Amino acid sequence: MEATPLLAEGAQAMLRLEVRDDGRGFDPAVVREKKSFGLMGIRERVLIEGGSARIDSQPGEGTRLRITLPLSGEEETP
Image (cartoon, rainbow, N blue to C red; front, side):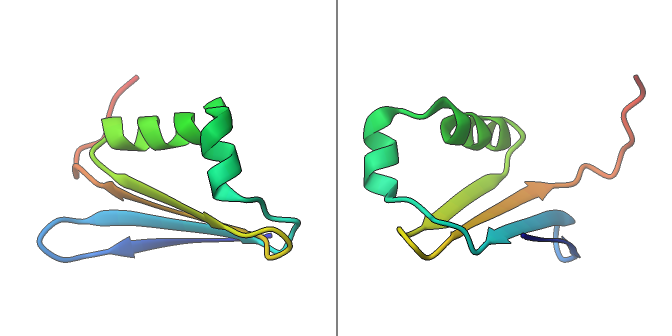
């Protein structure tokens, strides 16, 4: 498994994260039919923060997850 965080600068600073594996993979159409809360939860959380998430997978080919999130430039205090 490989994870690569990238900070992209431009009009708005963005955090780009890509995670890939060379595992079994899956058929995305089958997962959508099952309404999997794991993948759906990832997408929903990223969308709430104004970002995007893309999950690419094929049986026998592994999986790639790409997430892009805008950075506000302000640190949050707990």
